Image (tube, rainbow, N blue to C red):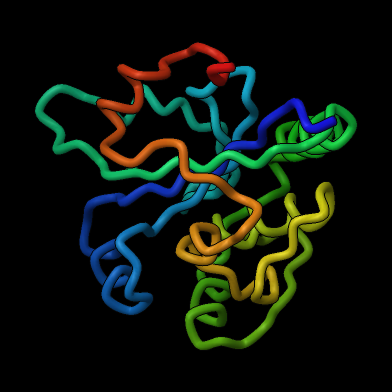
Amino acid sequence: MENRKILILLTQFPGRSAKALRWWTGCPYTHVSIGLDENMNTFYSFLMKGFIVEDIARYNRPGRRPFRCELYAIDVSEETYQEVKDHLKTYVQNQESLHYTKIGLALSLAGIPWRSKNGYICSYFVAEVLHRCTQIRLKRHSTLCMPKDFSHSRDMKMVFRGDLQHYTHCFGNRPYPA
């Protein structure tokens, strides 16, 4: 019985780099994170700083233009949910040895598959977690995935579209609505 949810959050970050990525990929979203249904404010991903545990509320600062986002949910069994949760704990425990790879990003944008022992970009990280822990297979090699690839999967159901301020107002630190 499928009774838990894995969450995928696509985000449109501001800035010149994000604008260039939007132009290059043709997708409004330049960042992807993965989360669990027990706290809809906490997500896991990679940014230039490396592996991060994202607190979505921190992106909602006064005077800052709201970030656009889309939230997708994936129905999974309790066993799969625990496997994803344990896998994410491994990243948290090893975050000092993990890094963001600009070379990996360039290779992904060029359509060249690549592997790095401890280097990730956000979309590769999320695709790898899904690949290792679930039956979900995206149409592209995990190192070539971009945020837009997650919105095209049959296994994912869109549950929210808007901006992060509205998202935080709707969900905050609450668990996924039943």
